[in-house]
Length: 438
Ligand code: DC
Image (cartoon, rainbow, N blue to C red):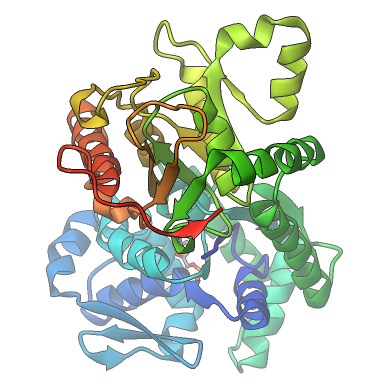
């Protein structure tokens, strides 16, 4: 799955760009402006002034919107009737801009927009997609162009549709809409901190599509990357050792994600865990490692090259959490041991766990892959059989987050860790291990 957010002012060419990219990638194009336009047009049809916030809010319960996709085309049903070109007039544009500044209208449309991206690869265009609707989008582009270039495009678009207007009128309406959209208090049209800025004043439509496809390809490559050269080299050295001497069985290989940012959550038996996991997962795993390792002369360079993230275990390490969240958003896999310490010789279901794993999942909007490492006992011994059991991904939506916070993190961590223990049969009799020899 990939989610692409295209934000920017009107007339920058977001919708034709998004349509073309969606067709090339075979993903769903969501035009969120059409939702605001539909609400604006509905209010006008009922004689409600779109600048009268209380009247607009009072009429919202009578609006039933549905969004469908047929052959890649977005269809909006307003109270059961399909909306058409009536939402594309200059009056509809101004009405949309006015209702979009009302918080209750934005809240009303939030879940419609988000739920499409939960189960589909999407390219969504709007004003607040990268900042509010899909803050976890893998690709965020803020598309802009000079006001003159945008007004010229809009003018040509409208006259081609037979709408009678002038360039000067389009230009001044656009200035007014830009001001409304970017200065409003709620979800203003501003680039997300991690958005890529693209000014297409001097680009053709095809040139803009190619520039965006290039950006997407780079991100996709990163998401599938098997790791740095050093990581792959060390892994090649280590893996045969486990294969021939470790008697390692990997169970549930089909649950290993091939691309994208994700959290691998595993029980912690010993230092060998990181080598075992790295030899099991085809793509590079990034670990949160004790800060102290980063001051040991040679080692500090080595672990940095291996993509380790320094963690201060003494207190709340905001920097490490932010680093882990950004890495997941950039498409990397982060391995976390929720127990926080190694527990050799202890049944994991009898140990305590820390909530960092779910806090990171919440902030990065990430799925979690539960993994259980199990030995004949619960301690590594030379030539003992080891199972690495990879569970089905626990989807972000299954973690029960509403607004975050310690109680939600506690519940989510308990769910993740109980899956890990269940995979290994801990807390019950240990089932017989089976699976491919690795
Ligand atoms: O992209 P558009 O011109 O169809 O958008 C119509 C109006 O809706 C625009 O003035 C701003 C508003 N809008 C918004 O506030 N947030 C979005 N995600 C999409 C559009």
